[in-house]
Length: 483
Image 1 (cartoon, rainbow, N blue to C red):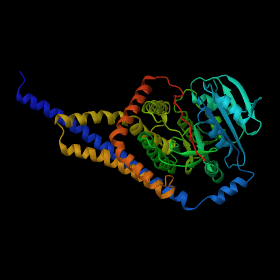
Image 2 (cartoon, rainbow, N blue to C red):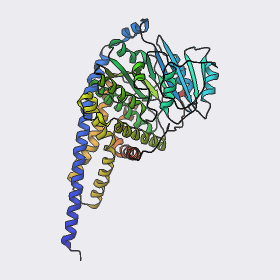
Image 3 (cartoon, rainbow, N blue to C red):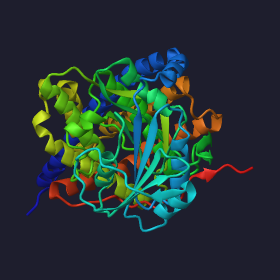
Image 4 (cartoon, helix red, strand yellow):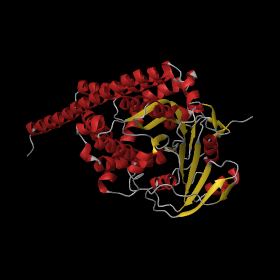
């Protein structure tokens, strides 16, 4: 027979468990946000230094210098009919002295290739291969534009992986630098000059990434962004905040200690010889962009060769982000799964000073907070909320939990927004700033739990070895400026 004492004992045990979980979560959130705070501070210094002296003269000299390295822009495309023309138009209009654009139509089922052929007067002709990297999908044809000889189109069979399409472009690229950009993206006219500058200034630079921001809500005219505003949907607004935080804070901070692990596939520039030495993009990786960056880090460290992987905060690549919850969820499942597979593949680099800040700090951070953290947050949230509802968790502990999980998170987001507004001010309208502040305040209550769930599913898929491909997303295309 159960006694009152037994019930009290069980209640005490449950209360103890709830309080321990809450306290562990508090420590976790404090550590996580302190690390982010340090990255914010380091990034603020780097961004302010970057913007203190305009590089207009340096960019003009780079443009005029006949020794400036040529760039091959590699554009993998799969069912991108809605936005491919403005994206390619923007690339052809980039201010850069020596440029080629290699678009790969990776088995599109819409009119992507036909639209490109009609719009840019492409004719079928041989385009010789210049490198030997893995390509599984059979090449169906190669084309060159009569109006823009620097524009090449490759049609190939799809094997369901972006990396195979990039490798197909890499095999026919000709310049010493390769820029990888998504087909739903638009670069600002000076973007390449900005991101090439570190290569010109420092021969140790092997890779560089720029800022990627959502194009949702922006207006495009002849391949150029003419007006930027925060999108109306809260899902998209929160992604704007998320991208600002990830690029201006995270990547600027990691770049400062040469520990940058991720250069977005939407906009990254690499030394072609380094990419070829690591064998191109891994055909089996879901995180092929990060995989390439880590492979280059490992190559240079194993050689003992001085090198730098840098982030340049000024050039912007505008890309369409998901506007539907289901599509965003699938994207984040895939990203988290890719991160899990990446950390498993390069686990021998974890906590090894031989691999510099990347192995000693960046990879442990991503393992703890970005891969395992979301699952821990979800479990903790369930325990804490259950503890409050059943009355076994004291209000004082719950109040502290809320303070560190919500207030610190909001503070980091607002700090990132402050850095953006104080330097680049890409969203100059007051109502846009207020919308982003509101998104920062609301994010912990709805988006973060949802995001943690998506990432936990991705972790589970990584542990189970679930296969995944391109990740379909319905494109709405760019909004066109009206006259």
